[in-house]
Image 1 (cartoon, rainbow, N blue to C red):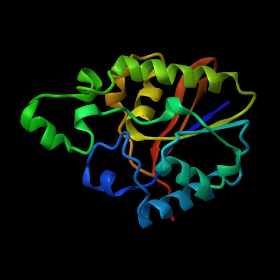
Image 2 (cartoon, rainbow, N blue to C red):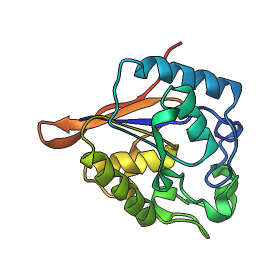
Image 3 (spheres, rainbow, N blue to C red):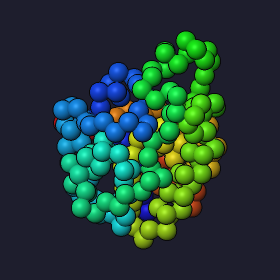
Amino acid sequence: MNVFAIRHGETAWSLSGQHTGTTDIPLTDNGRQLAERIRSALVRESFALVLCSPMQRARKTCEIAGLGAAAVIEPDLVEWNYGAYEGRTPKQIHETAPGWQIFRDGCPGGETPEQIGARVNRVIVRARAAEGDVALFAHGHVLRVLAARWIGLPASAGQHFLLDTGTLCVLGYYRDVPAVRIWNRPLLG
């Protein structure tokens, strides 16, 4: 079985580098175009389970990609709660918290890496119980932690998995060992 992990298309804040956790903003026109490209990549696939973050940017990406009717909203796929850092760029955060790193430090008033790890662990259990391929529509930081946890690394190892908007990732197995098959693959128009 394979898990297709899909980051939502571009938003105004992903474009500006602002941390977008609980702020529910729409896709840009380019974000919708990226979702169309995802649709063409998934058209030949069949999914036993489709899970989607409740945030509109993920739901709309899922819908445009052609899987909206099959999607089940999964609250554990919502993006990291950035607390006091919501809407701020890393540069702005580093002005008051030099050396801050989300995968190590978490966010004041928001979530810790361990809390995100616990959430994605539940998603992984659900995905592994499916009898067939799974599609997940979610966000950059939560999917980076999911990749790390999929292969048995701590949540903090998500820092090693860069992830652009509107890209495709596939998690699977090498024999019986969890593995990353495809990561951060752009889809050409």
